[in-house]
Length: 295
Image (cartoon, rainbow, N blue to C red):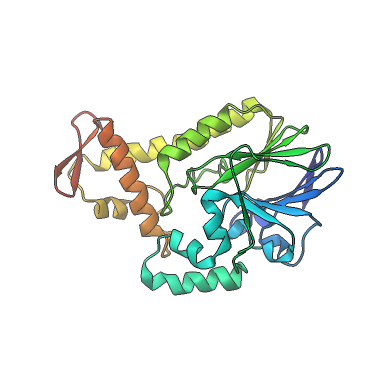
């Protein structure tokens, strides 16, 4: 399904672009056409383009990339992962026993081959399509090179995996960063646009006020994770006990990614709470909430 917002076409995948799909942008200028994040729905062929931009090097955002023999650009922070499937796989931080099956999934299910020809860009890089510009907005945290794109004069800001879903912010990969994600949310909040496009399920939101309201609800998930953690730390716990309790995934969710993501998420929140004086390490490797910190 294709939706139009000025000269920005949004190609919405099955299930409103729920994973393993993601939304793709097709932006038309008078001189060039551009595709952002050719997803799995485009694996059999997508709209014509003179160049491709990638918001970040995750498989669901590049599964259709093989159909484009044109220049491909991504932020310098994700350039290695886009150029090499091996680098992408290593960045997921999975246990060794899961690496081979995940590599097969990347190769066979998402058609990830690596793009050694990919070029890097930086925050603020402008792509001029003729009468229409696409400006890079660096929004790290989900990955080091995660970016949005501001299309003008249409006033369309694509925020990629700051996706406003009820799952909440994801900063649990090996190079994910809670602090960087928070800064990126603040940056998004300050950008005035007419339309705000997400990669998954929530589609396009019209109006800065409504976008900011939804952005606040999205970020509030991190506060709920910390409240859950503080309550669990009424008694001393190890990181592995916190992982068993879960801050991110529901108990029924299984997979090789679950424990690594839970562990990295827990460690980041422990560090932030400890810095705020709300958690203390009572003995090596065991943490407890400071009395009165838990609600």
